[in-house]
Image 1 (cartoon, one colour):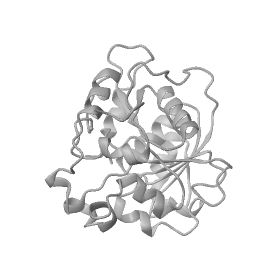
Image 2 (cartoon, rainbow, N blue to C red):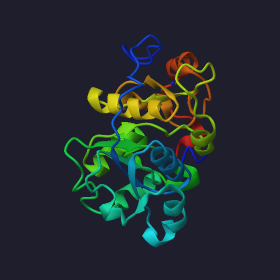
Image 3 (cartoon, rainbow, N blue to C red):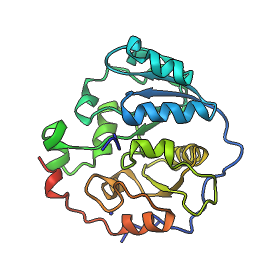
Image 4 (cartoon, rainbow, N blue to C red):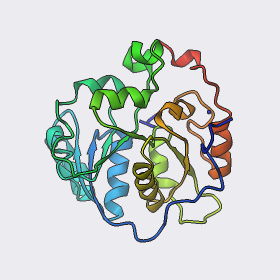
Length: 246
């Protein structure tokens, strides 16, 4: 999709307090993966004034055009997280275990890792037993592979919408994106970052609740606001759709 469901208590509350829209400090952000989502997040974050380092599996020399367009710094994967306060991992799920050991070494203290990944067993990733048999959510599995907690965001968003559908706070057609994670402060930071680039957010609960925003759920690809996203999260069936099983 290039984007590469009743909630538990506290999940998807449309009346919850939203993160502040003003005063978000500029940050160092590392992006691992420069496909559709990674490339457009590079564009949005640099346009917002953040200092961005971006890496892909093919090497910095393949990112010259993106760097020239955005001002981001192309780096090897091993250097993407250096001094970063936010690291976005946006690679195919099957590629997560192949990331270099210690890929997050050198990140800033308290670094927040955003996982945009989705599990496509038939189309791309092959069967991952820990997800299908062990019951892990996709992002819980990714967190285990990385050895670091993650916040799940941007996984159900069309890449082009990151550029075309950003709206100012309060706009009636402002899209909302679900955000799941176990660390309340990490989620607050991610939600603030998303708010600052033109989108509302809905707290989708912890990582073990993040199946509500996996492929095949009602919220996946939804281009609606807070209320509709909240309702879609609540309507998610627990069983993984047949098309997304290996």
